[in-house]
Length: 389
Image 1 (cartoon, rainbow, N blue to C red):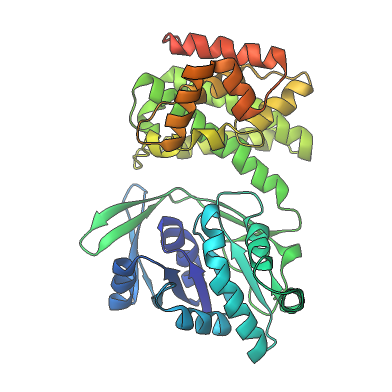
Image 2 (image 1 turned 90 degrees about the horizontal axis):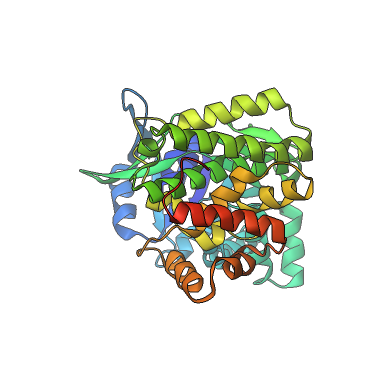
């Protein structure tokens, strides 16, 4: 049986990547630091995933095991040596934490055999595999790096699947929507001896898929969360029952889609279909998607290259409409969650310096007309006027 080593046994790891690899005939070994969860997987050599469909279908994933990267480093290295593919879903901020054991394992693997392998980081970030590779480069010597480069590929990927969890008798159960998309950059792969993963899409240029997800799906999701917060709605699904919210979210996605259409010469009709399919996913009544979770880390989401700001900047330069994007950015600046460190920092800065300086500081938007537009919507929303946005 083919072997997959997956770093990160969270909702995406168990509910999406590990799940799909298992269905493709892989024996999946998870690497994590949660000993309780590791013990549960090893006790049963399986785990459950619940689909958020009408029947709440429960699937059991077999032929799985788990290792603790802190106390079982030697076994993790052995698993790297024997793996056919290595994948991750640890969060982009944690890639540096797994790079040391990954580097050790890859060097040991090279010393024992010359079998090529691909390492795919499946994180909610652009070019996460390249980020992981850079972390490995910091650790190894130039000679060791040359050895790694000769036998190891770091193909980038784009993933899209809502993955949550709930408490069960055997601990957390991954909850996933029926829809999923795993797009892998084939041009960055080195191992073509394995069968292609059924259910994944292989492309030569990943960027259109990454940007479509970030600037349409993630942007629309965040916009819904920030509007929901202002209306006091607890979930994405409840917020979208409000016709004004649905109208604004659809409008902002249509507006942002012009960036994708013009940058990548995408088909307008297919983009419209994609937007409607995405809205249908957001409205899935079988999901209870907490708006504080979706809206968290507003400073990151309001940054220069991120989901709300980049399409607004680029379209504004082209003289195209950005009214709805400006309203989304304004709503993001009003997200005030006392449990979110970034939100606390953001609101403190606004209180001390005002919204105009906040937009310059966090979003690095300096165009006066665009900033005036954002401030207009900020003032309207702060005073409770959302329907007219």
